[in-house]
Length: 325
Image (cartoon, rainbow, N blue to C red; front, top):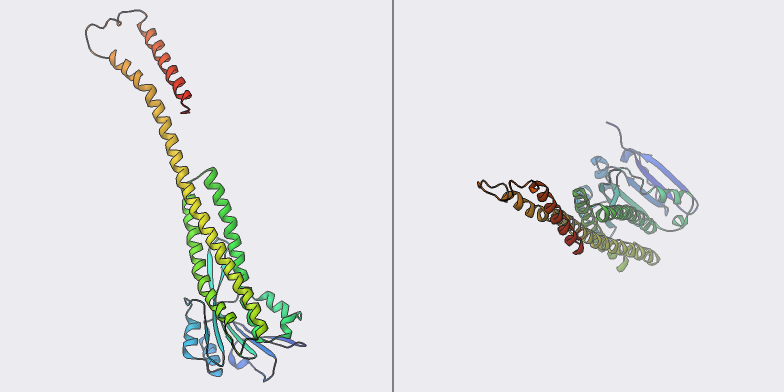
């Protein structure tokens, strides 16, 4: 079985160090004022998670929540540390939305993050730290803000893709509604509900950070968390707008199908109206009476077609005048 690599990052305003480790025994945590970040990139390594829980005296409920992948976003204060769950979101090549749960434990100079699998969501943060951005000058609370902000930014990418897809489906519904269009509308609505269910608990969790006075969160960092909170509210508003658009598309689709059915019925009605008098004439002269005055008339057949043609032209003229076609 291939070993899963995890990462340990240590930095201050002057120095940066990032190491790969595979077990808790590989890890050497120095006592210093440097900011430290333990990045656990897989939840399959239970021994490592238990070692970390024992080392930092994590509450059993925290460990339970870390391993529970269906847990909603939440914030919990355990006095010595803050525990935060945030649900991340990405969209794969098949336009399918995937939830990635992230758990963060914030100590004074240390963050421990847990995620289901290794992703690229934090790559930009690592690059910024490595290149000496302002994160290097601040504490672990600022790093927590940066990590949460990166997760929320991924939502904007997903929502933007959904918005573009809504435009495509909307054009299809307006120009050429098909049965597949209805399926796509319902799929988009399900995705929007899915995202909304992830965003509401996240809103409450981030609001809990920005509106409360925690010793581990510096006052100036609260302003940044409030900015993230505003982004989450913005995402919720966009989702609500998209849901309204989908409802409008559904009404448009049903109206288009109804109009198309009416057009078909109109054509069938026109043809039926034309052939009713012709059927009547054909029925009259098809009766098995012995004596019919016109049967022996040499112009009878020609007269039938002349009368039929006149009836057709008169009906077509009438339908055209009524704008039925």
